[in-house]
Length: 343
Image 1 (cartoon, rainbow, N blue to C red):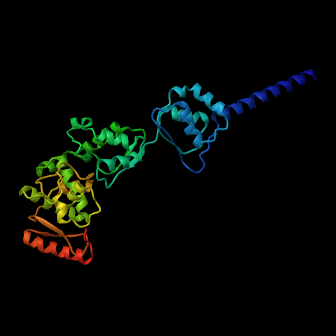
Image 2 (tube, helix red, strand yellow; image 1 turned 30 degrees about the horizontal axis):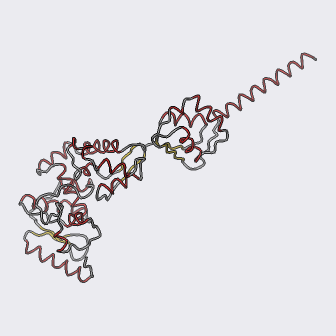
């Protein structure tokens, strides 16, 4: 009888031990952090303390046992190893699993996209919404030529480094890191084939980007870009001013203009291609891949002028002589008047 009591007691102890092990395992390794049906994104800013990181975690997860969570974090030395970044959690996790991810710095890259950028301020504002570095931090970096002059760029030309596309970056990339990454992409884009084409038309990469940025704004129909690129190249070769309306809009910083009036052509600016020969100081926006390739593959012809068609189709009439061009331009001006477009 006594031996039976001892056996029962031992069995009870074993059960208690097993239960404790089970509960301990569930506490440490059980999937206590639920994501539900949504992905959860944790953004830990640069310089965050452990307590600030935990504020971010608590804002997204219900931690049933904070003391255990903190105990695990301390055992794994996470308070001393907080790493900034963007962490996307796609499945339920244990306390240990989440701390392992945050401690390791295995963050999820973010896809950044920028298009239709006119200037550095717009660029900084667009990208600053997608990564941790804010627009002020970015524009301060891009406004200081000392940060990139060694690479051959000026404040007027550095925008050519940023070729519109979608790029994968880490969320905590700073301004210098962003520029370095874009410069790497820029150098990759300007492969031997594109460099050879630029040399063949006797333009530098920045000049190609500058002309491409003008064409991007000038042309609504992509299939016309190589032909219009050919017109501008013909004008450059013959020493004729580009007389590109988009450069006037850039000089005036007014992209709402639908009709470039004579008074606008008097604007005192190095970007006024009606007054100044050759290329303006730099691109008037981020040049697109399509625009750059249109310049590099410009049509060979003898057109020197083009004017928008009066049917407002978005296409242009091309001319070899000024007299022919003036007739087309007059047709377009009459249609503008008819539609009461005066500015």
